[in-house]
Amino acid sequence: MHLYNKEQAIKRMNQFGQLHRPFIFIINYLQDVSYIEEVTAVDSTEVLYNLNGFTNQIISAEDNIATYSAKTMPSLHWQPFAESFSSYQRSFNIVRQNILAGNSFLTNLTCRTPVETNLTLNDIYFHSKAIYKLWIKDRFTVFSPEIFIQIHPDRTIYSYPMKGTIDANEPDAKYKILNDKKESAEHATIVDLIRNDLSIIADKVTVSKYRYIDTITTHQGKLLQVSSEIKGILPENYLNTLGDIIFKLLPAGSISGAPKRKTVEIITEAENYDRGFYTGIMGIYDGKKVDSAVMIRFIEQNAQGKYLFKSGGGITTKSKIHNEYNEIKQKIYVPIY
Image 1 (tube, rainbow, N blue to C red):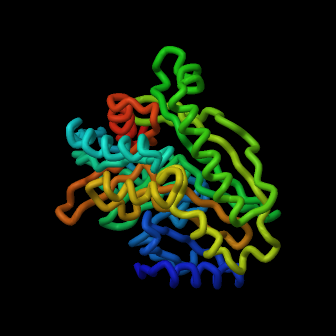
Image 2: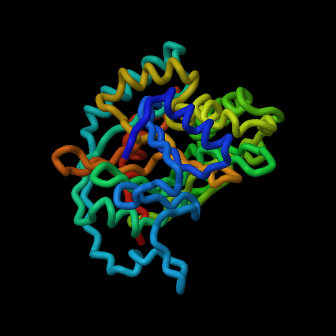
């Protein structure tokens, strides 16, 4: 698969947009490495995707499901080895000190967790139940529930920031998550950030839905996730600059923080690894509309063939370290059930 730098990626996306040629885009967290390819040229032995129904999987005409999904799923073995509390505490303290100093209001802190499993990346891709899925051969698999942006044919652009997670089996889980002051403040901050981001490239930006609940099913049970909907109107000729528009919104606010530029610097200091494609974005332009997702729920294969699951959460002044540590562990799952 051919990869492009930022300038090349923007130019290529603009060209495909101008010509109304369907293409997929996969952009890493730092936006310096991207895969931008026409749908007809994607090699399915290297890249598989199912982006909200847009897919290059082989589909059975009889039952309209991916033929692979009929294969027997092995009994799941899934053993994470979470980052030590002391290691997480070091990163958390760097973030907290910057927040208390007024350098950030919200910082998304992530980490890597080694995982032992009897599944291959290919197994995880095909058997995971998620709206947005991606498999890159010998590199990583993503099964993301989080929309980045959608652009409809009427030029309306939508974003759905996702902030706030709780175990659905907790007593009064919905009430707890919606009335938690820390979660409420974090969500309000990210909605404000995304609204400002959209205002850079769109007019009439409004928050059309605020703090609604989605249910996510995992192999360990159900989680409740809090999201909002923000929308605006793009210029009539937006397809001519589609690459510029998308890159202006990066990195995604939900996986960086506010203010964005300074918070990214804090993340670099606090995290002791390279995110790579994790927390980047993946998406498709089908010739009429754009659909995309933030690359969270991410499992990577390193050079030694070992698996690393990447997860994180938002840190604010109200964050309690044990709660945040437990949240990143809670997110280490595969949606296979």
